[in-house]
Image (cartoon, rainbow, N blue to C red; front, side, top):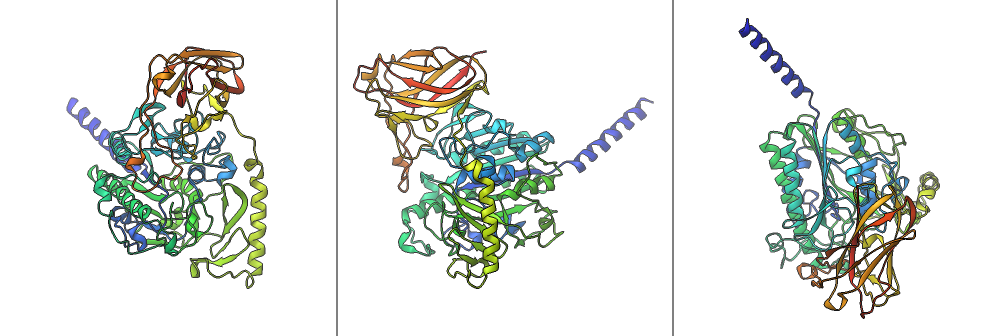
Length: 587
């Protein structure tokens, strides 16, 4: 009797196990490169480099001929996450808070999490630093990387893990890949979504020697269509960084093989905008920042063995707005936000159930000139100046065919006008304050603050900058904030200062409340980063290793206002340099 019971129990367990394995939803791994152009892959015919692992995703699955993202980083990430044009979600810039995705936007990652997926992101977020904009508040159980748009050093950098500051280990892309692999190993027995938004080949142009040495003195064979514009140091560095990305993609693909997860995993690869320098890009017009083809056309490769046929080439025009609905459809996850989607599922194209979808338009805008709208249809691009190009036959946008196609110009112009009207409210919205107290720890980097008096940023690009130049008691820095939860907070300032600044008292004020802290010890580390660059970093800031100083306890009422850091009794000829404020909520 006991034997029969044991046999029956084992049989039931075996049946349940078989059922659960048969019904398991596919895993999803998404790679997103930063500033890698359409042409920065050997799959596209670029003979300057070899990217066999990324190429293999296309060869073993589907590649899209006409896939479009935005002209800059943060907007693309917002469109990918929400399936809506970025302006609708409040993303109207790349720094000082304009990169934040409105909190009432739902991400497709939230739908995957709610469906039982383990979710994680490893890399560059760029859609908001403070909760509830933070990735841990947008559907990701785990996040490791940085939330800014730029980072000033790629070796052993300052990063964060689930909103706690940590120190990275080694080259940042290698480190992020290690963490992604560890996540996959931990969750191999359950469905997972692993988002790997690499931060290269974005500047600063840093890459380990073992990748750079191949290109250090190489005579680049394929050049930009306007070769006199090309910075060869930048090109060589970008090629090395792209080969490093490929190596790391290969490590993840190998781990899927080792764990026998390849057939159960959808793998996606794309980039966030055109190349960040003038280099070979298939003869297209424009680069990063432009709404011409070269600025917004990206590779898109999707692999799912046994479901997506090998070597499929898809001619349908598609965009980053389509990826969320597509992945949800393929995985059987319900993604139905309250707000209307601009994107649509491409699953029928990928699974061979359709060869084309109904006509619709993709819109591209320049962040600093948002009323300049470029419209892409299946056949044409109407640029912001009213020129019309038949793209498949004129990838370089050399021949304006507007005169011969006035009906098309009229239709696309009408669509562009309507789009401008739809996004005007968001693009012209008031600046939003930075949110504090929506999580136990809030970061307020210098990037999000405003310098006053002699204080200035360490470099023109705000993203990884720090405040410097403090000279008088009248100087200060401020942050416009919204306190989400009233209560007591410990402010911690990260500073650097020579011996002459010792004894200076820093004061933090908000809504009539204040707290103070005295600098008791010098901390004067050198700036570093540029010495590791393979090409000029342009407007990127160097970095320093700042040290924390507690400013006691500050009572913060709920509401909005200006948070001010000053040194009203400053007697030395200079004040400290400031990298960030942390506000730790006291339970």
